[in-house]
Image (cartoon, rainbow, N blue to C red; front, side):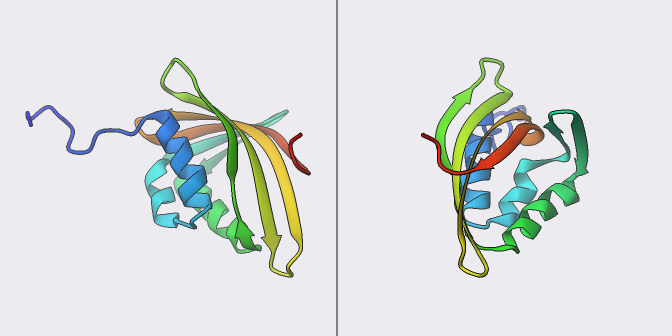
Length: 132
């Protein structure tokens, strides 16, 4: 290994997004969230954008998990952009509230990943139900 090679190669944007959904969320791996989330994350919605600090973005996951007994993200479609930074997903998320109520939510998100870190997410909202 030469002195110029990184000790740990950077993950692709697609790998980061898949790990974020399938391991951070599905397996409650909050330590991995610490690794995959940038110093700040801009969460875009229609009509607004919110900038979260690294800590706030990780805490958002932890706090969300605190409301549920179970959460699972199934990635129905993953499309990585040619630019190496953008990844779009279509997901289905069955969840069980602490009281045992089951809820299914579906949505689409686009992530921007730079140097192995999620720095932006676009989400137009989610809807209760199952993709058809």
